[in-house]
Image (cartoon, rainbow, N blue to C red; front, side, top):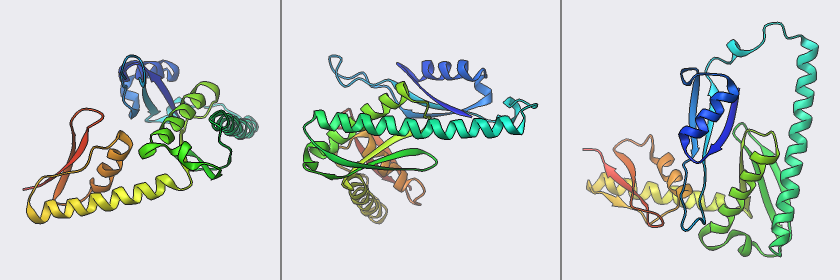
Length: 231
């Protein structure tokens, strides 16, 4: 079992999750999905977002549960999940409609996320914004809505007209090119300033690459990934 909680700090979010799970910190694994952000003059601030999972879930299950009860629970969970996804879709439709844009929304689901897509729209540029900033803001609003109004524990992912997929491919190619240069010339390579989402792509791309390691340096909005050769 795992739950996602948000609070002003990571510690506070973890404590909330532990209380709901009735578990100690030694009994769980903690994944920080999003670190808190103070913002500027109250704007753009974000709470910390963590996922807390029980290490030995079977120990916390009731031994006397009946098969008929389990089947009934599963059916209810599936129904609730479908209703929750419908809520998110309707909220997204209303959100972009208020922005003066219409679009066709579809979704799929994997082990980690509810993936929403806007594949047809009369104005993609308005929804994506400069460097994808509007798209990231819409996704963040969707995540807040899902946490507060549904029982879904997965993160919410949003892509518009394949923008994120194309951007991720470009960032990965750039990261690999700079990493190879760092190894070849034994030189520290600095990428352009990136947002947190883009930096995570670079870090994950080069995480297992031999000969280099990555760190983030600088302050927002000029924070960038630095690729360093291993000597």
